[in-house]
Length: 232
Ligand code: CA
Image (cartoon, rainbow, N blue to C red; front, side):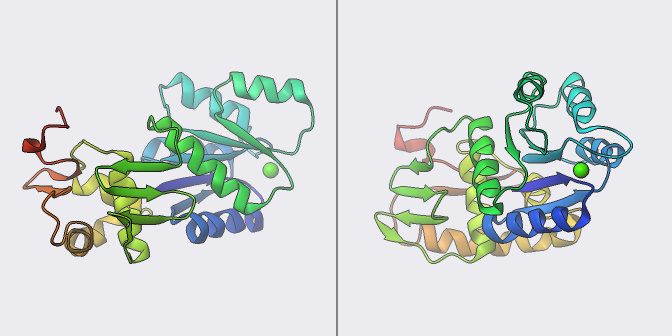
């Protein structure tokens, strides 16, 4: 998954980025003021935006307002130093999905970011289940038929994204956009490698194949069409 951090205190921004990368397996871009943040938010596809309110050039409230006015439904986690509850109500009404008051624990930020992403994609549970395949967001683990799969960090990120888009065909470029930062084009030839590793680990000798390649279109995680439980 891919996150945008809009925060003008560089060290804090970098700490948040590191937390999201290491604790959540995110690809992260940083914007250091409101204008740059708004530009970045509209130039790329993000799964979550972490937005500070006190920003130079364009205040966080204004960034949020303009994003929502322009139809963005990207989940936004607001960072606030302001204790004023009325202000928070205003921010939440303006379209923020959640907020954290500074100072905060980076681990909590990562957990909240993942929760609002999951909700935004229509999943409320912290475990996703497809047939005998189970992904646990909190533990960042994947099991098939109760057996833990030993995935590399990149394989986990690929399957996590496919799980969030379960049942739909995800193109290679969409996958890359959500896995890498701005230089994603140069990784385009490695997706097949992750997919074939995943297919071996997830499906292997299993009769019911869950990870599918749609030649020329992308990949999907779903029950096979002839399995009878999946109607699409
Ligand atoms: Ca600030």
